[in-house]
Length: 198
Ligand SMILES: [Zn+2]
Image (cartoon, rainbow, N blue to C red; front, side):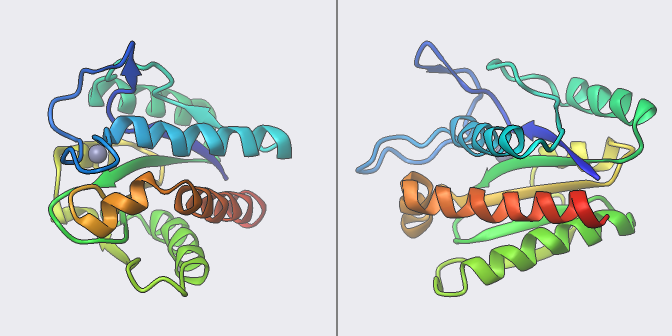
């Protein structure tokens, strides 16, 4: 199965972030804009997929904040012609806490299988780091409206929250190039496994 990437929220356009909220406090490294960080991760994954010859789709390549309805529509249009896909939405978390969380669409067993691959790899790759936790929850927790994408995509769907932006340890992880590189490597390993085995 191949990923349909979704970079949550907007990117920076001429230094401006159009998405309301969805950013860290202005601590010592500056403001971490969620959509900016989501694109760092997705852009790195795209490079790795290109180099490995692994195909993918991307429903939000634009820097402006593509509406959730449009993201879902694009994903469903892709699924209509290619059933071997899964939606992979990349986000960063808020609400205080730290670590990685994965969410899946409700009652979709393939989503759970895919999420399990990602979270197991995260667990193994971050075993040394006690500030990182991994949890699988089903989508009905409805933590934020972006879960709209999990509810409305027809293909298996996984949403990863790569770290909390508004706790101090999470914030520092968000800005850490080393931690970002490790997360991307871990996710790419999962993409390869899902591509070869599911
Ligand atoms: Zn988000």
